[in-house]
Amino acid sequence: MAKPSPKAPVTLLVISGDPERIHMALMFGATASAMGRPVSFFFSKSATPFLTQDGWASLNTMAGATGPEMDAALDDKGVADSGVLMDGLAALDARFLVCEAALREHDIDVTTLITRPAVEISGLAHILEKGHGGDWLTF
Image (cartoon, rainbow, N blue to C red):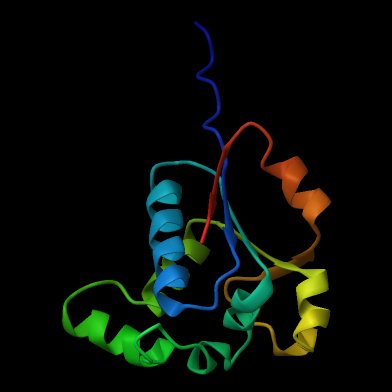
């Protein structure tokens, strides 16, 4: 009997600092991961602060709500907020990578990065290699 082929990876390029886009990327990644697809998030550009300990509060939606304010509104409506999604993604072994150049671009000290899920410092060449043969989405 033939072995089932492995599921294609999903790579999510998260470059927007808009909490709505980041939340959608997290929801998409959580769904793909729950379906057994290997998922990697690659954060760069204005999305990079999301991966810092206090970064979520510094990001604003187009309507002006901060990330935590948006989360509270989602939670009130029974929608998984970013904290729930991040915990689920950590449990599902999704990979979180941050662009080394973006850390420098935004003057982010690596000691301020979140620890759950663990964040790997990487570059474009690495993510291009790991995402080969899979699906790519940009948020």
